[in-house]
Amino acid sequence: MHSQTFNAVAVLLLATRSNGHKQKGDACLALSKALPGQVSFPNSTLYAIENNYWSQRQAALEPSCFVAPSKTADVSTAIKILTSLDQPFSVKGGGHAAFPGASNVEDGVTIDLFRLTEMTISADRKTVSVGAGNRWINVSETLDPLGLAVVGGRVSDVGVGGLILGGGISYFSGRYGWACDNVRNYEVVLSSGKIVNASPAANRDLYWALRGGAGTNFGVVTRFDLASFEQGDLWHRSLIFPGQLNTTLIPIFHNLTVNGLPSDPAAHTYFLLTYLEQLGGFAVLTSQFHSTPPPSLPAQEFIPSIFSPFNAVAQAAIVNTTTIANISTVSQSISQPSGSQQIWMNVAVSVASPSASQLLIDIVPLWQSYVANLLSQVPSSNGTQLLTPYLIFQPMSSNILTAMQVAGGNTLGLDVKRGPRMIVQLSVTWSDAGLNRLVEKKTKELIDDINKLAKRRNLDDGFVYMNYAEPSQDVFSSYGRENKDRLKRVARKYDPTEELKRLWRGYFKLG
Ligand SMILES: Cc1cc2nc3c(=O)[nH]c(=O)nc-3n(C[C@H](O)[C@H](O)[C@H](O)COP(=O)(O)OP(=O)(O)OC[C@H]3O[C@@H](n4cnc5c(N)ncnc54)[C@H](O)[C@@H]3O)c2cc1C
Image (cartoon, rainbow, N blue to C red; front, side, top):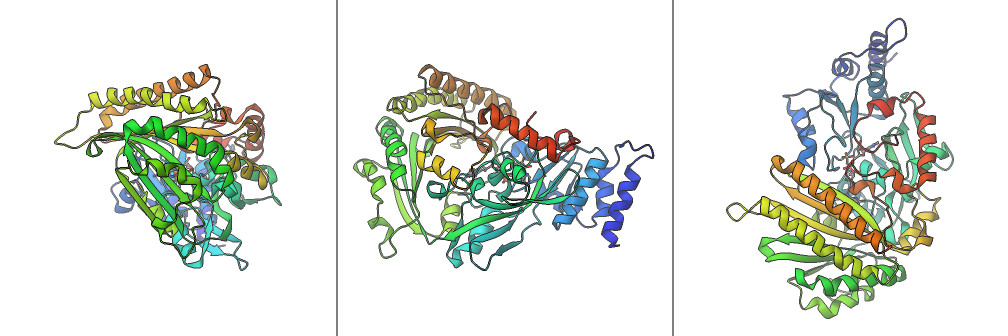
């Protein structure tokens, strides 16, 4: 017997009482015996590196140890030990979820997947197998030189795992749907430690559940086999305007979402408002992307016709940059540094009706008074702004919703017949942990107010996108009762003893 396997078996036997009941034990010790060299303890350099998260709200937690398995079998060993010892744990992919405990745990064990970095490309170039410890920059830096891409994250440092398992908005969603719609196969470690595949050919119910259902309720995904396609450089234009132009720009953006995007699946866009003192206060930014720029034209000479309605106002832009570059370059250009406190919340509104343009406009003053309130309590210090707020509109246009159904559909419950939606996302970055409760409270109140406003106008949708949500938001109910019940049935089948349900702390649970 392989010595590592032997160690694991010995530890499991030690951990189980003769009457078959489980007892709590020193999980970190057991893990370090079974998986030598893969466990890090507080005060070590590796522990300090692993306890880095995008959001300080997560990094503030201190697990008893991190275990970083080198291969799928080691993930299985770790899960067997943790469940046999009744040990609470969490799983870290790229560590980009914003709220505390999403992928870290106080006084428990955090399984850090960072060593699972394999990447292989099939001979026919149609499938890229990506280890769950990769970030999107690893994927694009491998695929760019080959002229290939996958439907993945837009920002370089974000982890592959969390983004795909919660949905995954991509530059290529207009044509292919979200990242979760483009997984051909998941390799998964279940709560029993068993390693299974989930695909249209094997464990179909689990395959469906993992398309938007998160890993937390089903298992640790160790490898994603992603559909790949031929792809060259991306066109990217970024326009920044003075904030008061929002009432001119929002109707253009609304029309783009409803009528423009469905006519050009190669286009992708989002729209945000922020408050930045160095830009003179409130500012509007619209980022536009196109995945099939003509190879011979310089970036500035190519403006996809779908984005031309912005040309009339482009001369009012404070910043107007246009580039054509590979995915790695674009994804690095919009990356956001780690090390601050972060919160994200969101809710979708229906935008099919022309009146939705006014709804989006009317959300802005609600957000502005929330910003004024927060900034009044967090004044700038020596000219440095200590809190930066964002209001972001991300379209779920009808072509995206239709593309989601092509490869079998997902768990999100986004029926295209109900028309296009807009994800209204709130995001705040700040430095002082003493403000966490205030920002959490105010942001939750604003999301409630936006929802109420949308309801009053009959434009509420209710969908909450997991990857931008706070734990107080009922993500799974927003998928609809039928999908939630179906997800629960799948969770019961693959976690029959409810060990993941009890021990995997943090993220969104089916209840
Ligand atoms: C700067 C930035 C840019 C972003 N850009 C986009 C974007 O373009 N599109 C988009 O849709 N979202 C985007 N997001 C949101 C992002 O999808 C979520 O934050 C996502 O959770 C990040 O995944 P992660 O693996 O880095 O996070 P983590 O915090 O490591 O994980 C999030 C959750 O997923 C679980 N998990 C991670 N890996 C696995 C696995 N292999 N098996 C089982 N469970 C796992 C974790 O346990 C945790 O519950 C962005 C976020 C940030 C901070």
